[in-house]
Length: 245
Image (tube, rainbow, N blue to C red; front, side, top):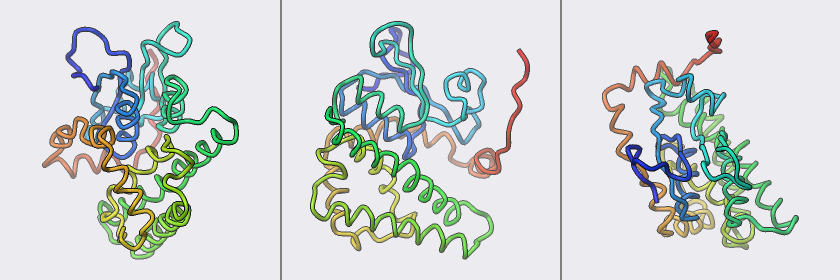
C-alpha cells in the first residue's frame, strides 16, 4: 500500500528507504499488514543518509527508519530506526506476526536478533569483499563466505522440521528472507540447503513479499554510472562531528 512521496495528504507511516535487504524487511512487513506508507527515498550511494534532518530520525545514519503519524497509544508522531526494532514495533502496533504468549514471542525475538547480529552483518561483509573491495583479499573472502555458509546451515537445520523459523510465519522470516535473496552474490548454492530453499520459495510466493521486494526498485537506477562515487561514500566512513546549530 505504498504511496508516492508527492502525495498531498500524509500517509500514516513515512518510510525512509532504499531498496536493499534491510529496506525490504520493512516494505514486506508494511505490505503484509496492509498499512499505508509513503516512501521517502534515502539515496545511500549519494550520501543522503548524512542529511541533518535524516539524522534527527536515524542517528546511526542508516536506513530504514520510520515516522509513524498514528503511533501506538496516540500522541505525537514516533520516529524509529534499526530494522529489527521497526519490525517489532509494527508487530505490536498491528497485533500481527508476533505471538502474544511469552514463550512464542521470544521465540520470534531471538531469531530476529540472530538475523540482526549474524546473518545480516556476515552477508554484508561477504558482499563487500566479494563484490566491492578493490583488492581481492582471499582470506577475507573465504572467512565471510564460509561464515554465511555456516549460517545458511543453521537455517537449514532449523527448518528441517518446521515451515518457518519461529512457529508461524512471523517477523523473524521477514527479517531473514531479504538477506538470502542475493545468495549468488554471497557465493552460496541455495540448492545445497533443501529446507532453506523450500522456505525461501514459500516466502517468495507470498504476494505481500513480492510487493515489498519490488517497492520502489526503480530507485536503484539513480546510481547507475556512479558506482565509484557511491563506493567512496559507502565505505571507509568515519565519525562526522555535527556542526553546531
